[in-house]
Length: 280
Length: 324
Image (cartoon, rainbow over all chains, first blue to last red; front, side):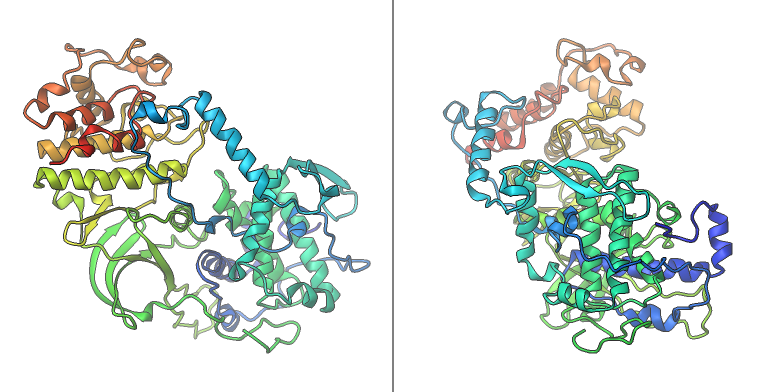
């Protein structure tokens, strides 16, 4: 995917070539700022006018538009983000308070976790697993197995890209947790989003698919967690379900960078700098 | 944002989203409370409900890397934690972007500000640390340990427990842990930075350069605060890391493979030399205090982090069961 015009260029070139450094960073910034809030508190929405009025999209900049796809690719439901296609509010589960056991130590000997995984710890873990197994309803994915096993992801959509790659093993618990979060409406894209996307311009759909592919590519490049990619796509969908971006691709690119950078900040220990992300 | 679709090629210009974050105009500022690394803190009042709140203004560092991830991490943790002894993050508000770049210059951009809204607490523990009655001390310690126990069960390390980060309200009846700016979720085999926790409350394993640590680092800080309550002065007021270590060893004895297996593998162990008294004499300085309290402090300030008492066991200690 020829994603950013700044590819293989040094950082100083990024600035000089675009000739609009402030525009670039500030649009990005507004996106990210909004998204932060949006993703963390109630559905906060950006005033899009905020950056629009300031900086109307300038079509004469040196952004290279995305190459037009030969045929509009349908939403492929093969990636984890798309499988679970909606949102991931992992961070909004409330945790129950643990009861404080006031019995003397010898009377709670077998239910207390030992610091180094003694018998009590093992037993507790086993019981927890059993409990989870009972609670989780396995989504009918991949033959409806108990474990998802290996989930296949398309690596990228560009020419010559590998068709599939193996992904980390995702247990049922993880997936159930992801799906469970979608009950929360404020953290999902609007209900009519998938329909609108499909019935809208094919370019939108393709741009989204390219963004998803780009996110997956970067995830692989930096060895990020799968959840990061998922979260990034979730942010993107949530934004797109409320906003319409201009068609020539510049905003979509910024959006993808923003979403990924945000998601990385949420989940990763090492976060690539935004400039590095833009250069990919 | 219902309805009106923008024409292709333009952004959707509808101004505000439904039920978006409120703006900071919903609050009336009363006074500035303090200033931290990540920005200023104000006392404010909700104009609609009249509720008092603390607004923490997030400093956005020149926008190169967007939103600071420390703040993001703090918000994420605080949204997860829900306990009476942990500060509650009520909402996040933004200041409206009023000034638009009228001149149309490209390098001007008004970014607005972001505020975290916390519940308002009267003061912090630092003010009462040196003059509290024994019953108050017990009350504060119990709440502190409850909050910490909750964090630890949920795999969160606070990593900056000190007087200024423990807030008190309700006429000294309620203590809450605050400032999760250094907190992080932990795993058993993670490797973290060891430059956390204020020096006076930093445990020996961090001072010796360990990068794989667990809940016990918080317990050490709690032990230091507990001791400070009784002594009415800081227990280990070191000015440098070296001095801090020697102060600790002076009281707690010198660590060796016997009382702390694995200590000699820590990166900085080689650089320290035993000072003259290597016996543990922590109890000597507390000889005229409640024996249960001294027992508990003694178990919180064990050099070996794996032997240090857990928050759960500390709550079950005799100190909290006996009535004063």
